[in-house]
Length: 425
Image (cartoon, rainbow, N blue to C red; front, top):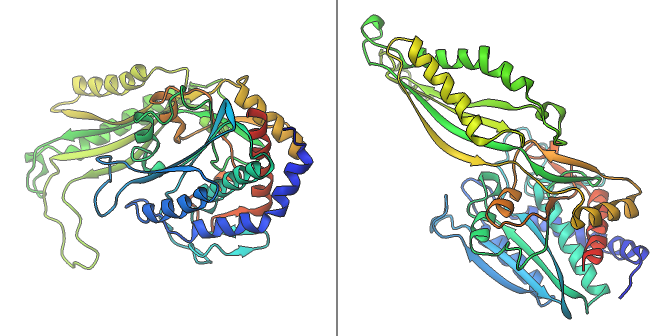
């Protein structure tokens, strides 16, 4: 059945109020992570919606994944609808969790207040507005073409904000993102309506410990400060590692420009006696620290190998060990993700690009995320390469106070998703 883009545009415009209402309803279910609350509530809400159009729905708990417990179960929803005959498939994946609100909000973060064409609330931009836009696009397509070919699938998943292990990673391990089952995946992350995100940089998190010997703080010469040993590590990073990383540049279209370089962030540092509570009037014990730890967040480029990234750190630690008296350390891997980038000439990217141009008259920018998102699991575990992030919203607003999403951006993105569904199926 041939449908012209004017019909697509018209049906989304007509459903503006429904799109706004759905976004508000999703915001009003506070799915804060950590700890991971109201996952089942939002999945059941979405399940009722998808069942209205006879989607086959599966509620899936990710038993045993990080954070999963009887108090905070990691629930996910997968909704699938088979077409009139066999053909291609398209899958929209959106994460249901949001980060903590933080301070300095001027509106209620879970009201979904509409002000001057924007919907405010935690998760409005990242990414409940994107979820709503995808749902309206799918529902509109089925209204216009109920006897479509192929299959349409949507998943609403847990824990993207804390690594995605209770969400997309779990589903990928269970075969839900197998290339035998799914041809194309669009993740409606807030990348702006004229951008297609092809992938992301790599990440390696590790914990480094330095060790010393405890002694009385009035006689530090009788001890050996682990904090001072860690200071040597940080000085070596600053003087010798940072300049090396600063020279590494990628051909990936990473945004913003500063993320085209390799980077390292000291995520946290802990050492010595535990500091007293705020309302405690005493002081910590007078001792020399016998242990200090840092967590490093190393972001790397597709041109780098994970083994080389780790070796840079090991070499620095070994260098210090040879030159510094009594220096000892340990290092522990916490988390690693290999860089990924979908081929810009893939059918999915071409169809989405054409839809953006036809609907809003702009040639899209192709970008790479400086951080990671759930494409990492779809690629590495699911072995599915035809995956991109595309959705409404301004990425800089994510996780900020007074987070919002523009209603017109959602409308335009929903039209683009609708046209893309039609092109693929």
